[in-house]
Image (cartoon, rainbow, N blue to C red; front, side):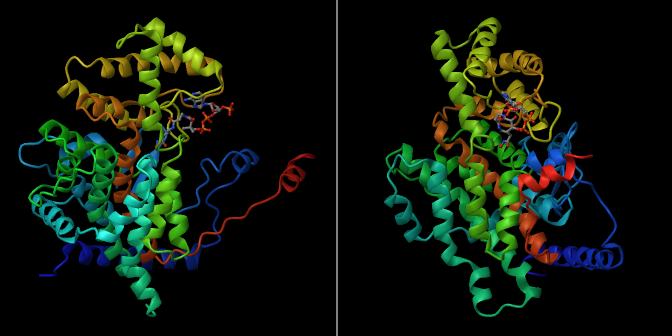
Length: 437
Ligand code: HAX
């Protein structure tokens, strides 16, 4: 039996797709797929089909599908731990990489494999420790990943003259090692920043998400279930979002997976992207403090929403560049709260905000999607389990995002996708193209 069944499967599947893609590129390469409008060029390239991304696809109304499966379907189909009800993120990684729902045995193998591959060198801890403790956790996270780059198998093999045919293999090895180490790096940062460096040793008998919860220091079975769900639903959102696209762009220069993923985390750290999960909970607690109640009325929330908008700010957790319905990732978290959480003021506030914000955003007449996104709910669930360090929330998102973007990076190298290099134009040129039409 092959020592790494996932790698063997990936080699077979990706080789077949690479052959097909090359064939069509040769025979149909000049066929038109899309047109580009003036608004798309000025407006952040919304909707332009310009990238190959195998692991997931986003429909504006239906939301995300991973290899064709919706989040509720994955909750049914992916392997669970013991009697747990939430899917294991290991299973999603397997699915995204090779397009097949894994069985329990395959997922157990992957949990053990990541546990076996984990081992953060001490110099990386020293790099983290050299940063002031009030350095934002996302900066610590990105820096630590960059420091770990010294261990890149891809970079070393390239330096030694690796053939193009082997790029995917080295990318896979780096992706697996990086994913194995991310919960360790993240929990180190968490414990150093918020718990005086009082570290908790890994439990190799646990799964990837369960062990992450354990190393963070929250020993609660429900929280472990939440982590499994959280790490599954944040993993991928097709290729055009900023963190995924950054991984793809940087990786296309043959920068290795560490360099590519560290860059992706810098994109995720922006408030219009992943940092929104921190901003949402800060906004909710700021509102409660100003109103003087942990459970304000809908009328009070309406007033506070107007106040935020009048100050020229966005309502964090609402709106999306692609989605035009409530985000299924928001709904999955709402479902989790309905099932597990009783009597939480902060969860109730999230639901009341959901009741009032869409109408207000619609009334502005310019917001294309008034509905909540993934970040509108996650903080309230974490707060419920005593996880109150808002500054760390985006790191949790980042650990999950590795699963999708690194699986996709393996595909990019296996398919031989080239350096990404779109065309830019000046505003003068752009206007000259339309002014006399
Ligand atoms: N509150 C107030 N105004 C909003 C808004 C919101 N939540 N969402 C959009 N708008 C405004 C935009 O700022 C823009 O205003 P201007 O024309 O004055 O600049 C206008 O509505 C049109 O924007 P849009 O086309 O609807 O939205 P975009 O595709 O440009 O932007 C964003 C999408 C997610 C960045 C946007 O909705 C936003 O800023 N939301 C709040 C921040 C947030 O929740 N980000 C997380 C998104 C999900 C994610 O990536 N998670 O990681």
